[in-house]
Length: 132
Image 1 (cartoon, rainbow, N blue to C red):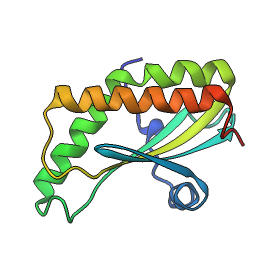
Image 2: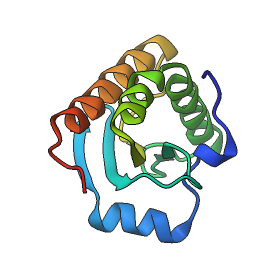
Image 3: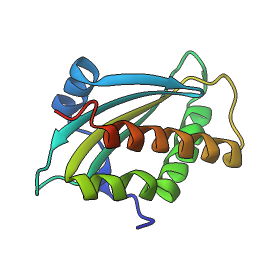
């Protein structure tokens, strides 16, 4: 369960553009989260995730990559908070985490924020508000 495979990455241009165009979003500092629930598809993983860090916040690529690496690790360790609910409801989700913070975070702080965001996503799904 503590893996982050290539299948779990959101890398199709078509899926990314549809996520940003038709998906829903919310803000939970330091993330702007875009998500889109979709009907279950056996060929696709339960969740597809994208991590983004703006060039305006971090001019150097080394800093952007570090933040993305920290975000991926925090997601990898805590994704079971969301995945278990999705398996229960038989729903897939596409998620984009856009980091909007101004400083490189400490891992423990980022992990706590990621847990909060994943719990918010599972609550949204659980209430059935945005299931399409």
